[in-house]
Image (cartoon, rainbow, N blue to C red; front, side, top):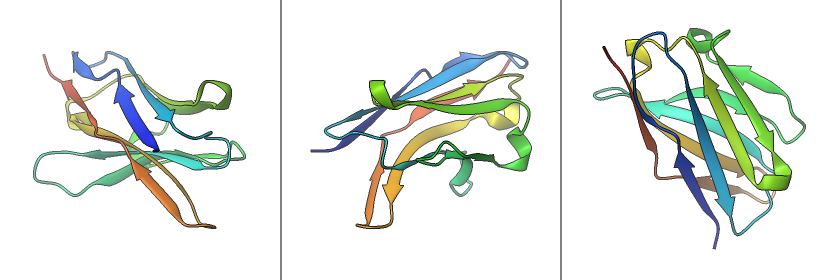
Length: 117
């Protein structure tokens, strides 16, 4: 059974940093594209960052230069390093793992990030 488990969320002051981790169980991750999404209260879930199976990355404009996505296939993990955090980064952050052929799509349970003084 494939599971994704996020960790590393918490309360941080504006300007601070957090490192989110997503651990995969029941499968290797090297064949999947990996994503971080977030959902703030009253808002739709949005894509924050992605890293392809080949290591290409992309970010939503609002986090470019502040967040870095990385993966460690040998440890079955993907990370999101978040620096210079702002109150508007407050949200539940979700890890997503998927590929097209065959179609597979897995989600973690989410981890809360709160940026507040």
